[in-house]
Length: 143
Image (cartoon, rainbow, N blue to C red):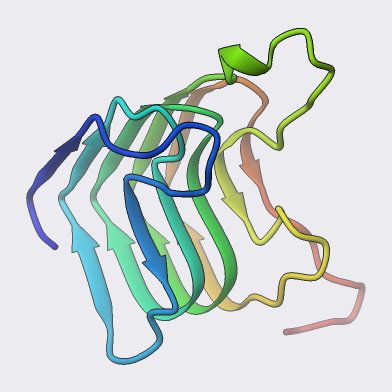
């Protein structure tokens, strides 16, 4: 998908993002020059997928996650902007804390295997909790 605008998509209080790659593991998928904005849920979710490149795109005005990856391999995310990620207002006062962030990379589930993931030249701005949530590796682990 190249040079398109996606407006007012994503479902509130679900992982059904405006753009989703779910179980996409065949040939390369490429999203470039895309504007995704003003949804009621997540901006983008890449789950159980491989061989994906996302570059030169902008995602803004989502709740509570802008760009998520879970159980992925061989994913490149380069030169993107994710901004204005808000808290879910309908959960206020319920004592629920989201892992809300502009980018959350393999951090939503405790045992999410992710390999060959590259994030370079990306910007996170105006996220309610964190710009990037990315788990580290064990010392000496080169995976």
